[in-house]
Image (cartoon, rainbow, N blue to C red; front, side):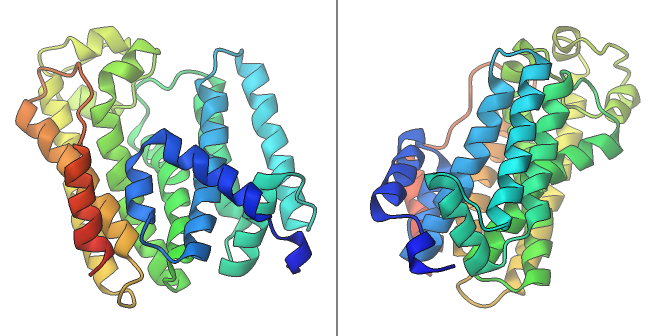
Length: 285
């Protein structure tokens, strides 16, 4: 990509401001990256935020799907060398610089489409894993390439860590998702523990819910361990942001477990000083 086609400094600043304003763990993990890689990650975050906001809107499913279809066309256009705005120019620059794959951007959109068509309720384990791959591991595959890991190694980290983070998100957001009519807990686990209901409110009030949550938490721990092994095989220094994210989300999972699964109201958070400690510990070593 020519210098003329790259996003201008003011455009990059606008994308960064969106990330900073969100006050997420993502910002703490990315702040120690070299500037070009950090700006590429901010663009990926802004893309994910844009498609996620479509799904979380109050629009009808048809409107959401139309907006996501437009993003499909936008991804096609940026890979054809026709980025249309500040964000897509930043994404096109990142894609060209770090060999980001079109199918991973489309995978994120496909995950959003799963949510947009209808509220997901008790998916099968296969559908559950596919959803985690699209909304989380696909983002990880984009991210790990920006971090600097070779393709195969990047994919191994992303496929494990992306799922670990998403499983933690699902456990953390049970009440919030339930209020929106969504229930991501796998059908087979519900049935294994004697829960026949599919309505979120009924499932979340069931006395056997803690057993299901424990099973999902065990899945997350296995994925965190798998991600640790995969990160150890990557070139030194490339996985620093991933290690920060793993540390923060691992802390969230442990806090959820300490609180117990009979109480699911109230969002569990990691205090900012602890996030800073993880950023310093893993971002600088």
